[in-house]
Image 1 (cartoon, helix red, strand yellow):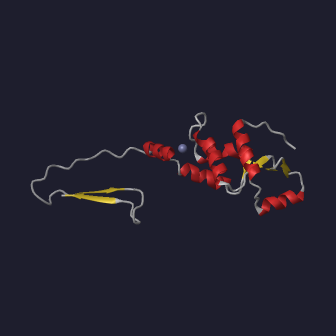
Image 2: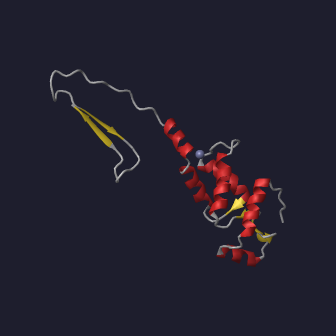
Image 3: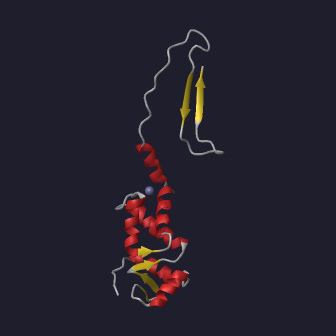
Amino acid sequence: MIKRKTTVEENNILKEIRRNATREKEVVQALKKEDGLTWEEDGVVYIEGRVYVLNNKKILEEILKKNHESVDIGHPGQHRMLELPKRTYWWPGLKEDVKKYVQGCFKCQQNKVQHQRKAGELHPLDIPQGPWQEISIDIIEPLPKSNGMDAIMVIVD
Ligand SMILES: [Zn+2]
């Protein structure tokens, strides 16, 4: 068995895990196998040395937050972020949850927009002599979907 040093934050998470004895079927079965890969210690299940986190929104949220928004971590992308909780924790859907968390992070989405390529330069039209001599069409996209639409077409006469 691997003994690990735990931080205060981890201890709080472990406390929360101990409080809830619900376990997914796969985990109960893995425990029964007694193959040394899954074991229980002090009310916490370890799977290949990683702490099994039951499906508890509050704990998952706390772990994800810590592995994404801490000052020393600074909003990693989903692939880089996944490496962090993966070392210590395991739960079904960990990868999906990390992806969703990053996609749902307001700050990350803001940065993404800023890093996108600047729009091309504008080419102003000549001053027309009369109506319908110069017409411009501009399509602005992609925008967040609204009623299934994600673009605006601007026509200037
Ligand atoms: Zn973020």
